[in-house]
Image (tube, rainbow, N blue to C red):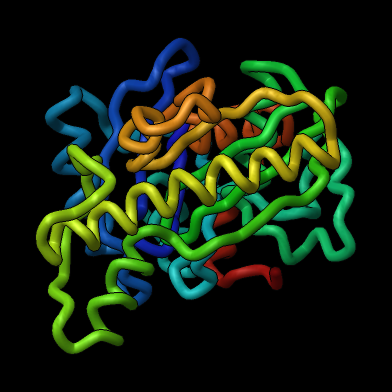
Length: 267
């Protein structure tokens, strides 16, 4: 079975695929100083609830945009599952061209989204990922990654608004009943929600102006919420990054595990 690990700036998602389906998905807050033993105590308890054992895992794939978290995630794979993990980075076999100036700088999550979305839906397309940052990644008809757009995530914007303006409260995100807010919180919620809808529609329109017609696939925790507010989002797929890890693991040979190999190889 494959242990897939998607480590983002906000959460780390662990999932197990048995070759046919995902057997479980679990989420924990990202904390770069969390040790491999802490991950293991938490994760193996959840394994037990799904009837899984450490010995069931024979492959591991890690995608992370948090370099500080990689060391302990690697140790988790090596020490608790006795598997050398495949780390998603530009140098592995993606099966498509990465047509940007510095491929090594592209976040693993963006390449994983490109891989899985083209596999599932074909191209050309743009993947909108609502994470700590909101990203737009463009894939051509043959699956090549063309680059994209990185914008501040909605929660970052909400927090910045609260921090910078003394009298503005911290708010939750939701779809307002009306555009015109009749109190401060409603006005802020409208500005944040419809402002982001306008950004999504505007960026997609400009991408189409450069690339021509393309599909739009959204992922991330807030994708369903924004999918309600705009017809620009055509498809919502919450598993796209995990699916990318599964596909990448299938494309690449599993790295060789050695008991003496607990030291990290250079990136």
